[in-house]
Amino acid sequence: MPRTISHDAYTPRPEHRFTFGLWTVGNPGRDPFGDAVRPVLSPSYIVEKLGALGAYGVNFHDNDLVPRDATAAERDSIVREFRKALGASGVKVPMATTNLFGDPVFRDGAFTSNDARVRRHAIQKTMRAMDLGKEFGAETYVFWGGREGTETNAGKNVIEAMKWFRDALNFLCEYSIAQGYDYRFAIEPKPNEPRGDIFLPTIGHALAFIYTLDRPDMVGLNPEVAHDSISGLDFSHGVAQAIEANKLFHIDLNAQKPGRYDQDHRFGSEDIKQSFFLVKLLEDSGYEGMRHFDSHAYRTEDEQGVWDFAAGSMRTYLILKEKVAAFHADKEIQHLLGELGKRGAAPGKRISYGKDADAIRNETFDLDAMRKQGYAYERLDQLTVELLLGAR
Ligand code: DIG
Ligand code: MN
Ligand code: MN
Image (cartoon, rainbow, N blue to C red; front, side):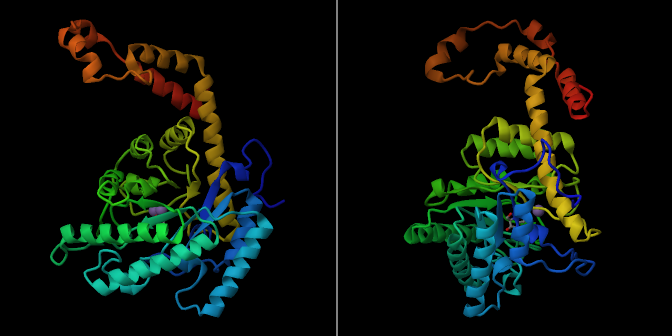
């Protein structure tokens, strides 16, 4: 039995909705300082292996599946092969996206390049990639603007760039409607890399931008753990804001040490407590979307290591999901949360001017008592840590 496949409470199954990009387990281990260390894996083989591991779906950039220089006949044969592999394994294709960052033509960006011909080419390439995604039933379309940004502001009018970005998304929303594709678009923020600075760098920037679009209802977010960690932000806070705004359309799970380049490590392999709180947020909020791992195995790994990476990503999520249930069942934790609930932390304790203005205007407060009262977060966090360490 390969060491990767286990059969216990943490064995992933399609209903868990775990997905991987072709580019993740297919990552050959190339980095800016070294060549590929693993052979290229075919899309069909990847589908077969992910299906065997219990994944629900696989996602792709257009060129992960159909190389840029493929002829029409080659495209058709690749699509046929891929469809056969999907049919044999039951693996789905929930999300698709466009590679608007690999081709040198996008060196100054795609939708926000200073060259209008590049901007138009990027839109055309995305239209075709949307067609390809829909051939496999993709429902979410991700926009990661990896090249939308600058190294110097000397040559870029960022106000104009925002308008170009908006034009592209407005155009593609209309294309989706005209084609009857009913895609949900998901913008993926990232602060930098490969550009010195990337536009729409955080969940907040992207949310604000979405509300300037012609059809904001069609556009949400695909936030990624590592991209917020790079900026030193608490990722689950951004995800909570996206959920509260009904804009969490997809999510990229991985792991990252703060203050480093985008490591895209295996989910849960770095900050266990942050990973726990993220899983708790997704599960407690009833998030029904994909749990997409946008990450890859260490460059040290051979092919078996890649499948260890994939299996570990899903297994850790399920272990943390069980810890969430243990958190909710823990009497001392729930007692402390109950005390906070009585003080006003319980959901639904809202105010409005119409209902509360008079009461608040005339309310008296025992400020001395309020100043003295603590919140027992030290005990609450200690109990959480002990639960995660298996000490309770
Ligand atoms: C990088 O984090 C980006 C690309 O891998 C892809 O376009 C997107 C979808 O997960 N994430
Ligand atoms: Mn990343
Ligand atoms: Mn990503």
